[in-house]
Image (cartoon, rainbow, N blue to C red; front, side, top):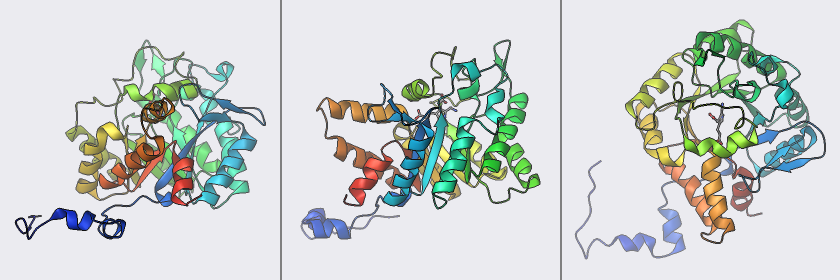
Length: 333
Ligand code: PBG
């Protein structure tokens, strides 16, 4: 696009910024509650919300409270809730078998939420880390993260989530070939309408720290995830990964983390035009919330500005722990 504008004084950009009315009229992007996906953390038990220290305002919820959260989300106009389990350490093993237990915490939560609020879409996480005694997203042998064996495990995990009623599966593991394998297995099992939102461009990031506390993976994890998550220095590789995942049957794609990777969001949207999401991850939430609690920034304004930035970068929606707070403001509640 070739910008055309009259030279000063015929041209004055401040005319369209003069009043709220003019600013509203010429606003290019808008955030709505329909853009939000709310990630919540689950734990066993009942009637308890256990605060997560590194994520002020976020708690691990027992099933009954998770159902309440889903009811609240629906009332606020949030279309999707995304589940992450805190797994009891005694259920974590090196073969990760709890991941495909039809009665595990996530699968029980999917059923309970879909029974209480069928209108809300439930998204899951497909990765082995919450169930892995070694903290990795894949199976580990002799210190190596196994690709093909992990994909087989992820397929089993995805199928029980679909059986439980999940609407959207979110493979976040970064193993090669998992989207195709999951898609084929879903078709064979008759789950033709289960969507896949692929964590296609997921970087090996320091911004996941608080999340690993939340799901109890920090203690277990040895080393890093650099052999499967992306190098933060790379951009073209993100496009190749998104192309690959779309070709294998992903319906939607994600860039993660969010704010430090807005350039990737824009490139992905421009290149493919597919439904594109960003994950404003735990560390991004913690930075904004932490600074706000110190009184160093205006938390509400910083939150809304950060979410609008994703829309400007071409995202169709955002996974964010701010979802209910943002929705309340957007709905004027
Ligand atoms: C792991 C997973 C991670 C997140 C979502 N799924 C962490 C990781 O890759 O170590 C991070 C989300 C966040 O930081 O908010 N499968």
